[in-house]
Image (tube, rainbow, N blue to C red; front, side, top):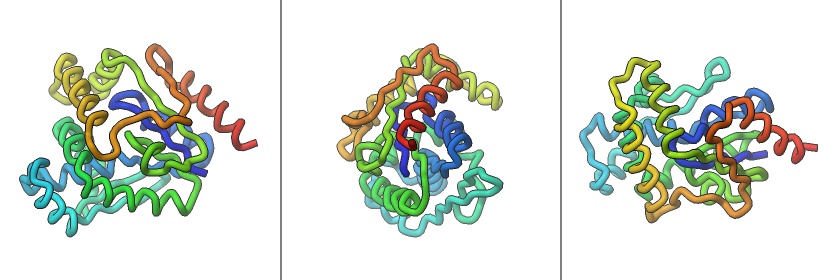
Length: 220
């Protein structure tokens, strides 16, 4: 079984996906981490997102690997564990730009489908239910107000000691929302058969309980 969780930045997709993965015993595949790894690879070589031919060239030899150690997903770039580095704010911003490129998405989607075809998997992203796994048995679309998502992201970054402002985070989220929903290839979009959940004002426990109820109903 495959569960697709889509939605804009900061809606709580990854947090919920990890919770459901633990509860259900499904493999959690953090698709966003893959695109962040691509962004980190491009930033390291000073390749801009508007030079797709150069991006495609670097992508051919980029050694991006996903491994699971002690039940946790680890992301490696060129043999180096970059699981923490890809969470840096600059990488998050760049990931939105690079993930809009068809050459990047095709490469990552190929890997995602390969993994999802082998085991019960939960994937989260922008286009899982509409493009990556259109036949996923269960689809969710998580959203929340821009203000709520900005507060969550700001709190997360400050906890890690990042130098950022709430207003800056809000503007970045608004920009990512626009870019993700207006890109020509596989844009952010709610699948027709997805269950939409507005998580504004909801706790993680409340969202998880609601979603688990739907999943368990399907598993019976």
